[in-house]
Length: 236
Image 1 (cartoon, helix red, strand yellow):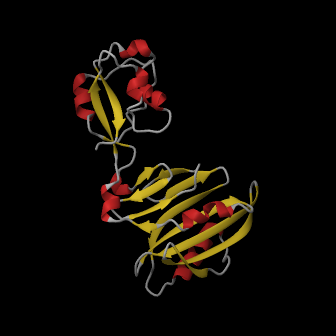
Image 2 (tube, one colour):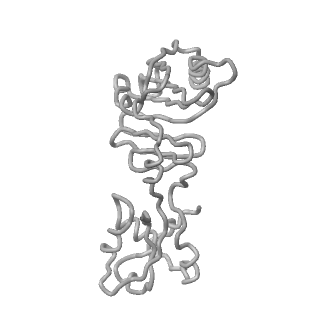
Image 3 (cartoon, helix red, strand yellow):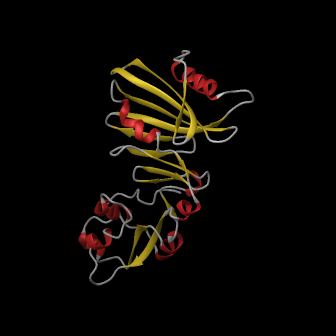
């Protein structure tokens, strides 16, 4: 969906009552059929997997991959399929070749997150100095695989180790517990303020800023002119 928050504070309001009725209940941020980012967790209720990124890292989801970025490095998570006769090591080797243009190190078999896996890593010269590159491939089923590619400053690849061990299958209870964000249109009460309404936004940070941008509010005086405002909430 289009991001309803992309309205500059102070711009002339164009939200009619009919428009507010139309957008009430619309999904915001993640489409659960494409996976959901919850803080540093990524959960996919349809494919029924999840993993936990390191603290302080940001996750960005797309239909092709999940990108994980932080101060000490970045990573990418994606899925694929084994071709007939292809092993995990073959898959990892092909992935390494496509990434670096070279044959790379021999993948080593291991077990991570209780899944058969292979991993390969090497220190390469990047534009900003040496970086540690690592590829980890998990066998999810007979033909389905998932993989992480991590790039870290030299000597800092351990920042991703807990994440590499966090990939797991989601239970029915896990899936039921996944909450998606939706727009809710509510009436402004006589005692409401920007701060009190912003506290109801389903975000842990920048609540006031998100609320004012979402509703194109330049300041407290603007709120007095509104009968209804938009919130982003997680429905019960």
